[in-house]
Length: 497
Image (cartoon, rainbow, N blue to C red; front, top):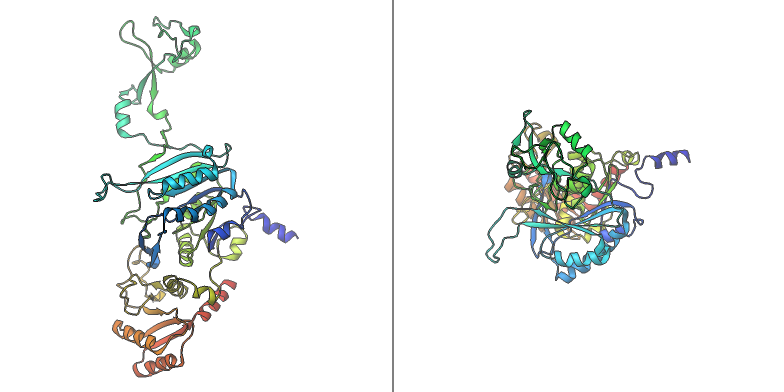
């Protein structure tokens, strides 16, 4: 009993697990969560943009078809509605909800969210400038912004105002004066906006505005003693107040965000994911509307930017994504960018993180789209999925031995193609790999001048195994046949260590 109490005490939440990535349909996972258990929710679901993306994932250079096409806007809203209902249910009364979208369905999304959260709980439409102006042959005006709809559960929602630096043009225009100590200031009037007959005193021979002064005589003396008053040089003028630039916290963050740059081709954090959002964007949302150790949920994790931002800001987090490959890439990103370890025992004492519900059976993997299955197999072997899916010449991925990686030369975002020591991987999702499949892989290996290769399949025919043996004896080149069952057993064994 004492051991169980000690274990529970190490968890940041008594009702839900955090620092967990769930692989699967977010609707199913959300329904397992209790009511009012999350402090902040951010989602960036696939837009209804009728486009196909080819996605590259960072270190692994994974490329997979990412399709965010829906039959219609109605189909998109019908897909999102039950998920948003569940998200509203799990949000605390003090919580905040953000829905990131673009122009394709934003107006319909807003109506849906008003119905779920209520119009009164809509706080802002944050407009983020995500790209520079560009020509569009089909439209008079180019589209350069995204919308982030911000809702709360109640009037009790938490936020902490944040400030940004004033625009240099604003400072140059408004703060035109400098005192003897070199402090910049501007002048402001001291008249009351409404008539105040009790504050119509003269001060040092100067009369107030007909409405009266904005401050009491006592306060006026305090301002004078502090050198805060600017006296007119001509009789009949009015006293003004000095407002110093260095005393201002800055300009409050508004709903128009033009100061956070999008992910470009030179950005250090770039993974190549076409809808990847900058870390600074998520950090601002999380800083303003959550506290340290609050729970952040992203139900459409993608490349995991919200999770990384939450971890860096000392928040707890939960991620959900339907793609197993995305979940594995997120795990690698958390390890690399945050120094977290994927370890069940460390997670139990509140230090590491875990990934749950990754495929554990052959039946589950048979149902995967072909690109997901290929990526799963290559990543499970510790390889790098081939960055070219079309015309890959029989090679779906490569394994680079650790000994072949020059430690000081290989950096993030640098291709490894210059390294000649690598082994090809071929993956087939068919029930049984046959002789023709092996023949094709042998040709690919010889073309690439590889002495060792790996072939992954559910089963191998007798002819296929015979041909691999013949190929080894005739050429000295070896093809190692690995079944899906063997890979799964290896993963289960590794996780149990």
